[in-house]
Image 1: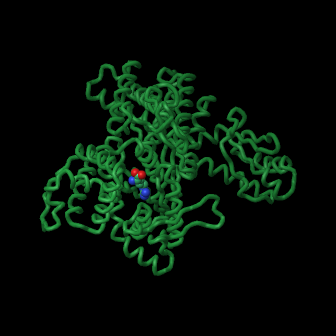
Image 2: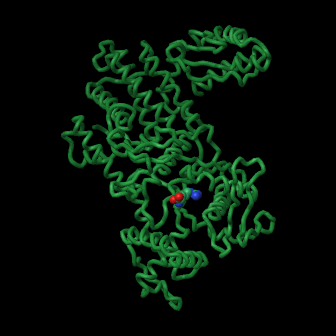
Image 3: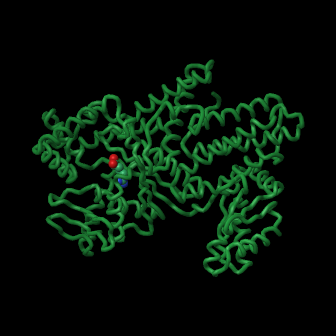
Length: 587
Ligand code: ARG
């Protein structure tokens, strides 16, 4: 079955074509005025410009053809030539029944045969993951779920920051504190100890100290730079120590991502691109793309029509060290060789926009990206009440793990206020509170347009009323409980019917999922999914308020309504799953 919107597009495009107008102008969209129409087509206006005719006259002609179709109960013209459409209930019902029989039908498949690499998360080894990486992780995970749902082959890569100056800072700090360790003895021939001399807790203390020392003292910064260069050049003791940092961090990060419910296909890092850098640089030099500039090796990427100054992509600094842009460029090469993707998406803070602009231009100049389109998916910041990037009370960066605990506690309070999960075991209650806390954080993040900043307000995010994750979980749980009670009473559900305004609105929303999935993907906009599922829950609420379900005495109608409940539940759960939100079995 094709989606309802695609079907309407085809019908209206045909009518345009039959009038000798461009078929592609017959695009249909959900109505801006749901009180007046279900769908609308604005194409007559553009068509009128093209053929220099009166838009209303053209709209009338197209409308006359559409009126002949069995699909529509009403075709009207509004304003300068908008075509408003309403479908007959019989046509809607046929499609609703088909959907209930196979809830997968009509879902987009346009990603089939295409591959996307999604780069998100991006925490840095040795530094604890903090709220700055939270948005990348939540948005990126939603996109990986959405692209998979739309048929794409998706490869997600956490792209750890494991190769930069912070590694040299750590190494040189530990060299001062523990000069006795074999990693610093240039004469040592190995093997190096298997156990790490430092733990995650040590790293969390050592890194800020090292970074502060480098800021305060240029000699310390020089030492850190030198250690970075030596690590990258392969000094065995430094490599062995670095391995420990990596392993210790990976364990910590896996735990944190796991508690968010996020999985990556690849745990690669900047360091994985290292072996590719030398040959890549040689090749770029040989082709005259990379050139010397003030001792450094760069690719000039500025264009005459640039509105602002775009710096060159620096591949090698004068001391031979590689930079963030170098590893990103080599990582593109790595991904293209391994996956030959159609698309690489980078879900990274908008403040890195220029970095990606420069890298993408460098990739284009060097013809490195194969057929892949490269795109930076930026996002704004999560701010505190003071409208500055969110910090803890003590002024530090909030660790993800602490944030999740905070959300769980707040959710637990809310459950108590609502009298929910009251007599469940402590274990079940904790797991519900955790799911609710995560839903609160994720939904709040995803429901804003990703480019906007938002204020972290846990009290608001965890509310069970309004446009929140917990409200939607509760909506799903409530339908689950209706269906459970129906089952206990031996009621069966049957194919849904449309007998009322509330049922029609609910049906229309259910039938518009495929269109929403496509536009959310096209705009890389998780907030479209949030809007959709919130509206669906609202429509269901109205249906539930207006109608008897379990107490309906007309058995056929009762069963059909149960069918509508089941389809709604399936759809809410499906969309919440795309948002990375779980529905508890009960609350
Ligand atoms: N590690 C980086 C940071 O913390 C983010 C990495 C984003 N991905 C990339 N390919 N550059 O800012």
